[in-house]
Image 1 (spheres, rainbow, N blue to C red):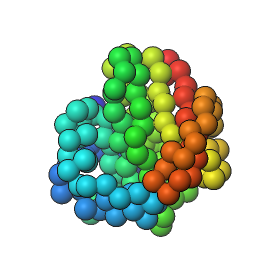
Image 2: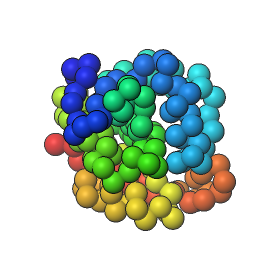
Image 3: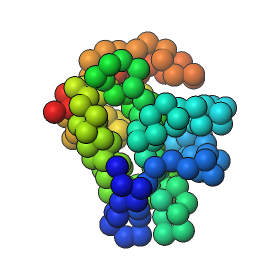
Image 4: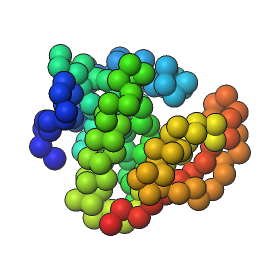
Length: 156
């Protein structure tokens, strides 16, 4: 992937940089209602650098991100994906997902998976637009006890 890809102004898409971690941790806390040690972002970014995409504003500050991992040969997993609330509905999430799926095709991945809260109807509709479908119910999956859906799609 090229280091910087242009999005509709004033956003750009790039790979994760270590100084992004505090902003991404805030977005995760506010959007996903989860709290992770910041070392997690660094270790996951090293496992598949091209799978950690960041949408940045005109000042290069993260406004959204998609963190993908590869744990099973031929399969990509979206581990975390969020757009900061003030920047939603502006195409940021769409471009992150399109770029991630392009990365998966480039790496010859056959399948992509993700988990989503059962109560997050907006996210479920978003993923369905990208041909993800529910494959499993994950009881008590989230740290607050909420159930999750596993969703998947073929990449090709």
